[in-house]
Length: 359
Length: 270
Image (cartoon, rainbow over all chains, first blue to last red; front, side, top):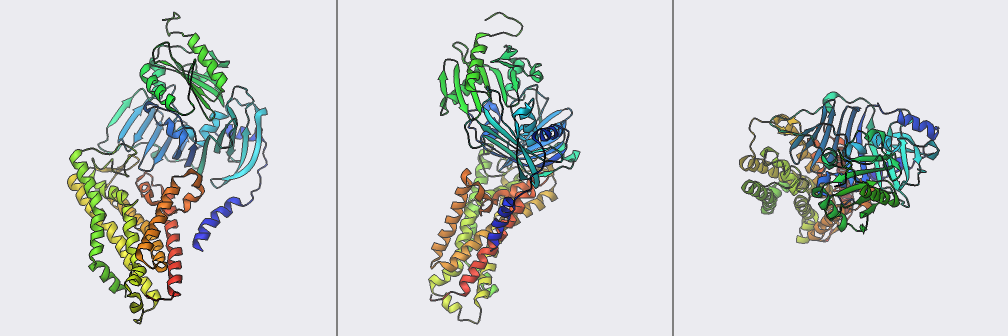
C-alpha cells in the first residue's frame, strides 16, 4: 500500500491536467530575453545523447553532451555565480567572480584559477536552461516561433515555445523551451536534430528558487593547505586562439563571423542561434589524437575534405593540411553540405596571421 | 524473546566471522594504498578513496563506500534470511512457537536482532576503518578535512556528517533486511530467501544502468544507497538523501507488513 502510494502519488500529480498559460510565442520570447539579469539557484539534470569522439584534451565535453549530468547552480548575476557538476564520487565546480574563474576538482584535489578566455569549450555552466535558452534563441526570426502546451516543471506551470529554424543550413529540426511565465526564466530546453524523434540534448530544472543566493555560497573559500594553480590557457580552444598562426575568414560557407567573436585571434565562430559553426585551427599534437578517435567512431567517414562525423544535430569535420596531422576542426549545428563547404574554403584560403603569403 | 535473539546473535560465531570478512576488504585496500601510495584515477574508484591518501580520517567513509554496493547487502541478506527460514529448515520453528509467545513477538524479536546486526556491522566497519586509516594512511593532525566542494570541514563537522552517513547506510541496509525477512517467511530454506534478495538487488543495480528504465529508477532499492556522498557537499544536498530515506522507509514498511501478514497466517509444519 505504502509502495503503491509512493509510486502513484508523484505519477498522479504529473498526469493531472494543467491549465494553459495565455501568452503568445513572441511575448514569451520577450520575457525569456528579459530574464538575463535574474538571480536563481537550483538543481538541474541534463541528458545528452551525442557520442562525441573527443580526446582527453577536450575536458568534459564528451560527458556533457553524451551522458546524464547532475548540476547545482547558484546564480547571482553574470559576474557572480557558482555551478557544481555533481559526480557519484565527487564534483567539479566552477566559481565565477568579477576577477576571473576558479575551478575545483575534488577527485584530482586540484584548484585552478583562470582568467576568462575569449573562447573556450562548452562546460557545465553553458547547459543551465537559462544560459542555453539565451544562446539558442539569439537573433531568432519570430516567424519561426510557435507555442507549446504548458508543462509542470520544477513546481511551476511553464508555457512552452518551439523554435523551428527556417535557415536551410541548420541541422537542428526544432528547439523547445519552457519558461516561468512570471519571470521568463527558462526552466527546460530540448534540442532535436532533423529526422530525430528523441531530443539530442535535454536540460531542465528539477528544483528552482528565484531568491538571490548569498555571496558566501558563490565565493570559493580555499581550504587550509590547498594549493592553487594559475592557468592562462583554460582548454584546447583557448590555446588554439592564443597560439595558432592561422587567421579565420570573415565569412565561412555563407555564414558571417558573429559580432561577439570578431575579437578572437585564430578561432572563428560563424552564424547565430541554432545555425552556428566554429572553426578551430589545431596543431598536430592536438589534431592527431582527435583524428584517431574520430576514425574509430562508428559512422565516421574519411572524405577528401577530411574526417567527417555526424552525431545528432552536430556535424564534425577535421581537415588535414597536406601531409601533416594539423588541420581545422570545424563543428556546429549546420548541415553536412555547409560543413564540407566550410572545410574546402578554409583549406583553399590559408591566411597566416601577420602575413598573407602561403607557406 | 528479544533478549534471547540478541544473545543468540552476539554469541553466534557466524556473526563475527561475517563482520570480520566485511572488514577484510577495506583493510586490504588500506594496506595496498599505504604500500603503493597509488590512489584510484579520478572517477574510477569508490567515493572518498582518492582523498584518503592525504586524509586517513575519511577512510571510514571510503570503507562504507567499498562494502555498501555488494558485501554489506549480501551479509545482511544472509543473516536476515536465516530469521524464519533458518528455524524452519532446522525444524525448530514449530517448537519455538509452542512456547507462550505470539508469532508477532517472535517476528519483532527477529527483526530487532537483524537491526542489531546491521548496526554492529556498519559500526565495526567504520571504527576499524578509522583506526586503519589514521594509522596507515594520510594523517592530517590539526588540519581540517576538505569537503567534496573544496571547503574546510572542522573535526566536529566531519564527525557529525560521518555519523549521519553511517545512519543513512544503516537505513539503506534495513530495506534489504526487510526484503530478506519477508522472503524468509515465504521460502522453505534460508538459501532460497538470501538468493531471492540478492537477485532483487542485482536486478535493481542492472536497471539503474539502463537509460530505458529511467522512470523506474526512483523506486529501485539500490538507487540512493551511495547518496551519502551528498552529505559531504557544501552546502549539503539533501534531495537524494531525503528521497533515499523515504524510499527505504517505504520498503521497510511494505516488506515488514508483508512478512508479518504472511507469517502470522501461515501453517507451520517444520
